[in-house]
Length: 467
Ligand code: 6PG
Image 1 (cartoon, helix red, strand yellow):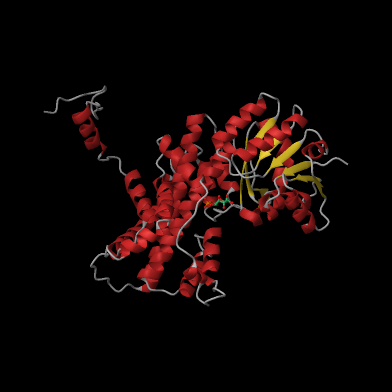
Image 2 (cartoon, protein in one colour):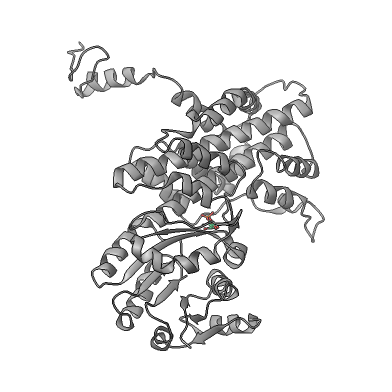
């Protein structure tokens, strides 16, 4: 019998996707460039119908037409070389899917090249890590709609399910799927950094123990902050180091890594005039963290503020931090969704904002309870300019801004750095003002460079001879 789908690239993600497909009743062909990973997967199998192949030609010829090949290799040149190795054996109407974290512009180039050969190409954002790949990730496919339809029965089956709805939906043309995943990761960076800042305040300013903070996160995870990242933070803080017996968090080196998707999100925002300050601050926070040796040296030179810290009521301030974190998250998601909206308009993509929020509810790293409300906001008003002004979130942030202001001010007075909490507050305060100080910038530009300006009261473009 012919196989119904093929998976290329049998690292942990690829193997788990293959097993997930087989668990859902697919006949899966698998292939890896080197034999070792194929053998590893075969050893792990527990009766699933997965057949290994050791030559690309045999692998492709084992597939029912139209052939569907799911590529799960490291983003970059490896994808081009896999595509190159498949082309000689594929025919018009077959479909290649890239499930890695490819840059959406690379996906667009590959889409065009393959389309000219009659081969369908889907750039598929996949979120959920190793467990998600195995049990049900969030799936963000982009490409031609008719090509998506060929793969949809399999993709929707292997996706996470929330209230019996799959966390997989058609996102838009060409590179739209990988674009959605890229910005998802930008939001992920911001969300993680906001949580880290809340943790810092609880630990350094309220002087709570790691264990107590873990309990607080666990409690928060039962309310409106309920989300995967809050849940795993509670678990992380409970974990003890087997060597020292200390909380494991205290022996982990404070230098953050990154693989590029958050950086791409910021670059795309900057290139296209999209305000993504919280996401970008979270990226820079990782960069500063990486300067560990310099920071340790600077600590002996640069003392912090001479500030007599007032005694804070612990319970009252825990709730301020909860409000600050919730509001920071709302602002970060508002920036991410604005990036979707503005890019969609720029590229004519018609990204389904409501559905993006829906498929983020399960499987993915930024899954969170409040995505239900985000989705509802876009259902009620598909052209909503910004989540902050939707009735639900407007009421929330108006209410919670005091918590955010208190935490940011107290933290800054105490010498704690708050890249994302303060960027959230700045974003909120900039966005809610009908009048900004950019008139002064325009005057300065006109003064030194005759760059001209517009007026509030008269149409046209003006220049003043300032001196
Ligand atoms: C996901 C994750 C996943 C990966 C990130 C990590 O949605 O499953 O986002 O794609 O964990 O790429 O990114 P950094 O290494 O850049 O933090």
